[in-house]
Image 1 (cartoon, rainbow, N blue to C red):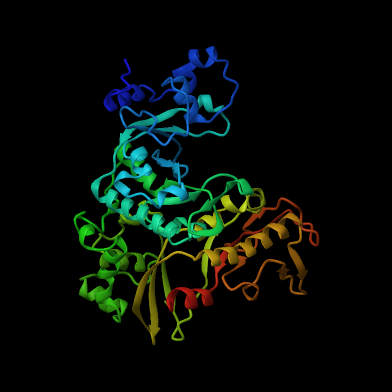
Image 2: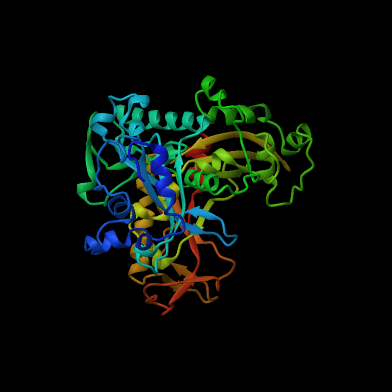
Length: 461
């Protein structure tokens, strides 16, 4: 029997959902109410399994027990392990009120301190009533995570107090993000208290990497592949942030060559291996070789090792994953992979050539400023227009080289587009055939960060 005053009772009642679908678990109730396919997975679960009307109340869903119900889709890896399909969106950020709050008594903490998580397998070929529920568990944050989440919340709040709610980015923080919520139409813009410029509606969210950590925890998957930077949570009481901890581990090695660092750490690494710099980074952080950095994985941090020439210019531009042409024009900017990457947090490790040696110069946590994201958006828009219009190839030279209309380095300070493929025959399909050549597929391309941008805006700043 469900006791709505007891967190334990609610969680046990929810666990009966495991390996069932909504149709199996709530079938009679759904039929009785004449369900017509309206609502999302969570709303149906609230109404037809737990028996309460979905709401957007600032209180937790189970107010008496202080529990908030959250549902989220899973995908399955080839090895059978589960991973999150997306970030976990929590409550909307009320810009006009949140700046008056302290974390411990905030509306965020009241609502999300204790979560009841229901993870289901997403399958685009099935009705959502037939999605299989795989994991169900209550979740409260471990103390070391909570310290980082509190710091993230305070950073978001400080940006609002500074009149910069319109510049919020998921790259600002580690585990708790401020993700855009709602359509891109004007109705999704909100007033902010200390600036007349309206800001996009955003919600607190647990980053996808952090949700994966929760899933592994609930599923009791082997976690030996992860190593922690912060073994003792108390360290976060005496330093400002996790960033300070990481940088302090690298600073003693500034000005030393990769070989010197190896010797000091008692290592013998294969310098020709692709994993060489990743292994060196792990060793500096006190992790075993080959381990993933738990805190970085939870925070979806992109680690980039940059080799600088003697004039401080990176040896190469920075590539991002290839995009599919059809997906590019079917996705709006807010949901685009490019914007998501640009809004991420990065960790740069800079080595500089000194003759043949590579010297560690510095490390830096970085996320792209709002104004630069807007500048990079121009490149994305140009690509969408070019692909949509079928205007890919500008000319084919006598030697058979195809010159494209894709945005070049000279056209944008931040980014450009160029090939990222094994060879010209490594292609993706085009949504519209190219007007000049009639091609229906084209060599894989991706967005790149300009080396000059990395030098001026990341390394030298």
